[in-house]
Image 1 (cartoon, rainbow, N blue to C red):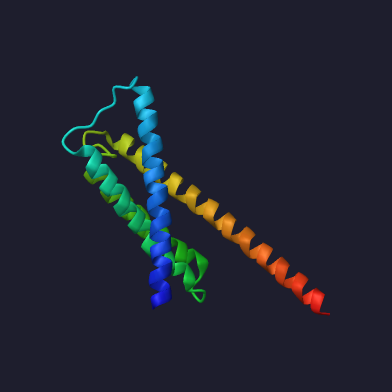
Image 2: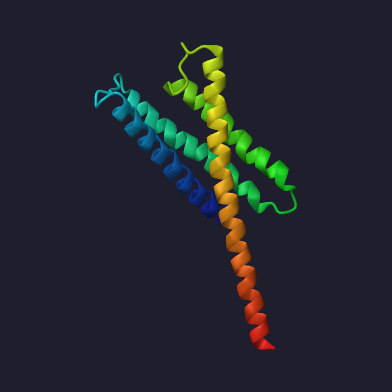
Length: 148
């Protein structure tokens, strides 16, 4: 149990860092687009930062499902990404990333972009961990050959 909590904390830290990093980057783009006149009022910035932390938790905590090796990978992905994306969508509507005034197609487009970004980040991690596992296996094989 202690190992799961420690791993969940690691995933939450990584996910929250990614969420806050993306938030800062997008904020810079908005600031550049509006010629340095991008402003938020009514504690909107604070709400968005808290929203980023919640999104980090929403993607980080369910990532422990990947420890369940007896569960098929597609099910683990659905649990992890499904809960993360639902939490992101709720937070996005609550803090204004998805505007209530937006039309249906704008909302669908924003949700599609959010899903694409989430799965792209997931794919980068998948490739990273597969490469890491391959390197470990190669080192193990080299160690076995060295003993022979």
